[in-house]
Image (cartoon, rainbow, N blue to C red; front, side):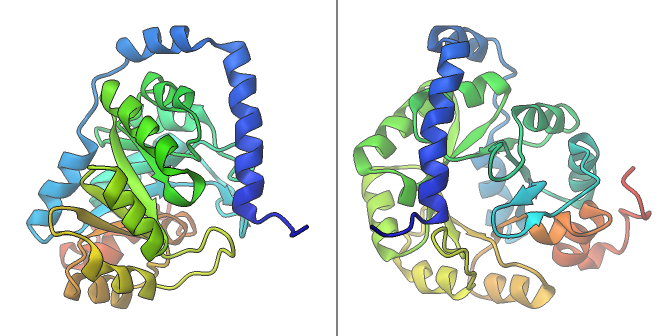
Length: 278
């Protein structure tokens, strides 16, 4: 029998986690919470508007740790990071809520969203409609659907639930087969191409460039992972990609917002200054 990949281990644990959560809080209770949650802030619209102007539409990620790198940021205060990102020019936020593999928390999402005016995506491994409703109850504006983690029927089901509770959907693909499935199954305008293989965790920006010609022009392409310097940003912009999801590069910087501005808006100078978050 083959050794499970990181993704397979995460998904097995996620199914257990959902069962545990459902035992604590019923779906009906979550649905009630979702109805009184803060109104969605328009995650997709914010990105599309920025990218149409050929300006970097940056989804800045709040991430404490990862399976491949361990702890990425020791001093981790979601509110301060969110404010820093907003000052630095982020269009949206991504907040990791997976506990076991990314040291995330639902509370981190709530804290980050309350600290700024930016739309927020719940970055987690969605495998059950319960998690989608839960995301809206937490205040999320968008959810991530990872094609490699779902079959087409489940993917369509989760997207329908997201739409019913007012959430946008970002669908994430890693290769041509997954892209084909995503385009056939979902009508979301947001297509994320992850440059990190979730089975091996290796990264290559060529992944986005290879898939780009196959993505319809009415979809917004978001390149995810592997953006570490200005050359990477310029390579994508020259290729017509203006939306980015960046996490680790910012999280390793003393001031994440200043690093965002340096990487994506160097013409603005150093407006986000200081060695600490403020």
